[in-house]
Length: 362
Length: 76
Picture (cartoon, rainbow over the protein chains, first blue to last red):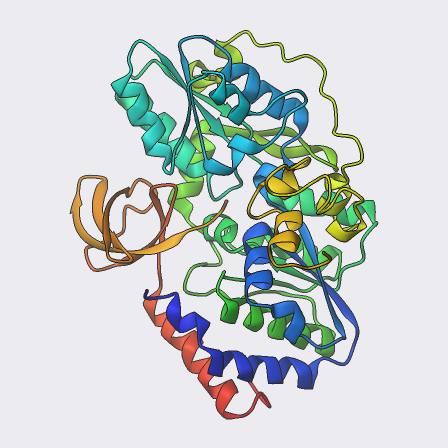
């Protein structure tokens, strides 16, 4: 496939690995924010080819993993409304909330449907005019504009049975929160590629400027990650901290202005609660008053009750980069992809699932 | 979750396009990329094109990586 296979060439990977090994002298800890990057790093064994000077830690960049139980419980409560269809992206089905999961509800007869596209949910509303269709709006800046566009399309077509539970989250504010907490010391940040496709590279500049941490935006193929690490190593060795883009085919410094405009038309920033991190100001997206008739939280009277956390699960610490899955006593024993206790084992992009699937720490 | 896949635009009708993704034809939305044209490669996320891939930048990146490989990782 074009733009994929050529970025997996092993001869070019060897060149980058050699360069990284030559140049890296100073011990450095790099965080890959994004769960998609975590998967590439594990799938291609990138940790194993890096020199001992470089330590990689995973960050909170998995939208499903960072969704707090209180929010999951809202989604689960919405799915229990009679005559409602819940539309959701795949991985959400198995995530355990405080008491049950969407998958268990589905097995008991609730109408929960997996969608691949935001438009599928909208089409579902058009095809089922007597039912309410609720899209679980989970995702970062990459996904939020597609959900915003679906709301604008619904408004255009006067579709009145389409609703969104907006649990979207914004990445730059949470990175600030993690850095301010000071629990994990970083020497470089691998910035998320497709989030940056939308927001551009400018929103990361505060990290390089205020925290002195080199930032490089990466794509998702193995050469992208290696090039990104080589650029971070160069910054570390040269004593620079700047924002650079390794994924130039997919990211422009200014981002996608049209997508940002659509996102801002429908949503406004608001506080959001992140698993393991807590409430972070302006890190969520709330549906604006003009479009509030699409807001599932306002349209339906739901009261999921107080949330509870699974005992022994350390997903929160893992998401902050403070602990790794092998530090968890449940990992690979009570908690596996088949019977997950915490969300980091459910989502294919979660750190625990990556460790488990690629046999690390087992 | 933020997965986006390259797709080749075959035809455009209003804000929708017929696109080829790894040999399979799919209908995608161009709401977020009104500038997209037939023959462009776009990144598709949840059924929406989220940007037009920059083919020149892709070629330039590969040229740079080839240079690094030829120099045995010494420069670049």
